[in-house]
Length: 282
Image 1 (tube, helix red, strand yellow):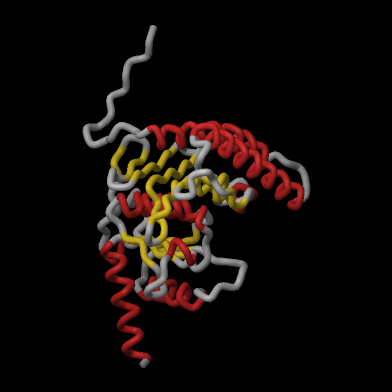
Image 2: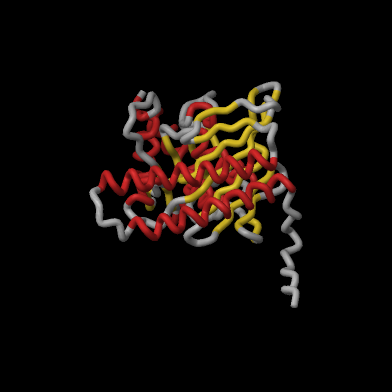
């Protein structure tokens, strides 16, 4: 007997062929990742051994995603965390892939990690993300967005939060490598602290951005992230009505990796504090 058709909300668009390809690829890769994640907690080996095991899990997931996407869109190029850059026959389109964002969490058996895929389209003025997907396999949450079509969590349309200052929930990240934007990152963190808001470190930038889009976080910021960490998340936040900007004026956050994503109230509160501090100290 055929399964009944599941009706979707009226505001849920029919998934495009491009998004269907992405969903299929991440679901296939996620099966292997979840098997590996369940093994991590039981590995009776040194920490180095666990890291090596997770690195192999990362590589396997990326290979699975690569093969699925290559088969579906053979002319697209690739930018991958592990495999690097591969030019495509179509120079205007490429996949931007992080097969396992939140590796440190994964290593420590912390269930906060995801797969992220963005579709980058080259334009006359640079590039733009036209589709993005962030998948949390632990909770089976699929965050999806396509340009001008809105952002969705599974079949539910997303909208960023509209919290009061005292209820803000912020997330940030740190970098082990030096970056010219560390001072700006410190200023944002200090501003948030002065607002007496909740601040945490998630450890998976793509999922942090997805949570801003879903209204779970009010803002997140990072001084040094890679394109594969943020490609999908940038579009999710924008399509959910949020803001994506740089800590440094006139900089492209996608190109520099110095990024802030927030609701409008959070932007106003943070920028207001930073302007006040600048006036006071100069």
